[in-house]
Length: 165
Image (cartoon, rainbow, N blue to C red; front, side, top):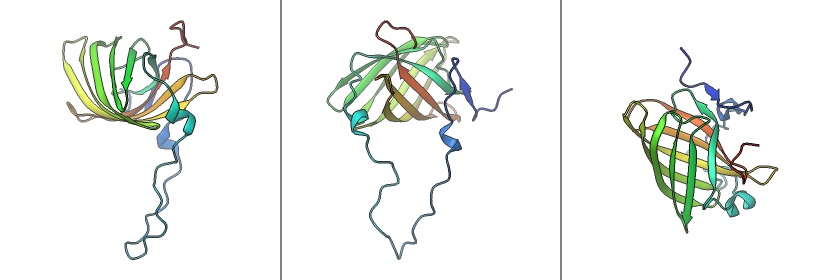
């Protein structure tokens, strides 16, 4: 049986696991707060301006306890700060997500029906990036609300023809 916290490649690409990054610097003591810095990296202007409305995406990596896979396709929409998507394919019969976007970040809840006719739901925090070829990539950290597992995934925009690059 696979380790639920280990990433599973859903196509031929290898993507670095965000958990393999160096640990963060220790927090400043309360009595000496230091400069006002965010722990998050600065917003990438290209990613903040990336258009996701009307675009299709598919996972390239997902933690083993996730249910989306290489044949799951997400159809994204955006209206101002509001985002939503419909998704299906593979282990997912029908799914929906809804949330908000601020710059290169998205925060949403998702819910779907799997092929065993079980419902599943959770929350996701996403960092948007723009790939060298201009396609958009989502680097996600998610947590099931309907069961105890959590994980990470990488989702990329499909090429205009709907094919993977």
